[in-house]
Each structure stands twice: as structure tokens, then as C-alpha cells.
Image (cartoon, rainbow, N blue to C red; front, side, top):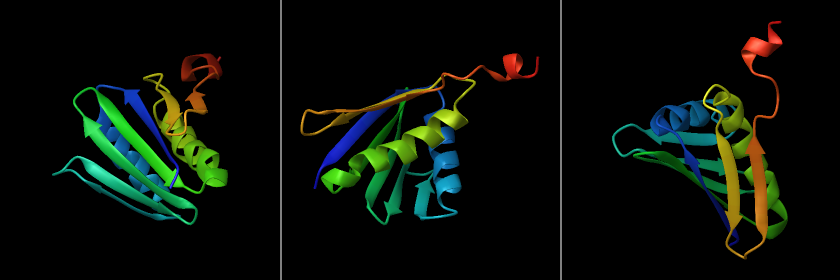
Length: 115
């Protein structure tokens, strides 16, 4: 099954993984383990994994080729929104060599939005 991975540099990978699993868990099956530093996501169109490394959150999604971009978008978009302050960037790399989506927060930060 086609797969896409991303390595998101952050000094708080477990925090973001836990937040992402909790948020997405409202609509899909999602879990996070503090003990193992790993979690999983089960979408109708595929699956995802979360892994806290010492300096990064490692993400992977798997699904049918026509659904891979959708999975990348859901996971990447939500994570970047949570990580606005840390300016997280999620750059997906597909196993077939095609470029994946890139997510970054291009909107003004909270200081700018408050005027």
C-alpha cells in the first residue's frame, strides 16, 4: 500500500503527538502511548503512525494512491495548526518518489492577529 512519511523537527514531539491523537480521536480511531512514545490513527481511507523521536515527531500515512494526499493533508494541516507558535513544518515524502504535500503556517502569528 502506498506510504508517505514526514519528519517534523520539534523539541516537543510527544506533546504534539498526544494533542494530534486526542483531536483526531473525536472523529476517527486514534491512540497515543506515553510509555512507548508511539501512536496510531485509523481513517476510513487508510492508517497513520506517530512516533516521538528525541528531536522530531515522525509521521507516516498509508492508503490507496488516490487517498494519500487526503491523509497527508488531514494529519499535516492539524499538526501545523497546533504548532503555530513553534512554526512546525510538515513535508511529506512518498515512497514512490513523487513529492508529497508541504504544510507550514503562512498566516500571521497571534501577535499580528491581535493588532
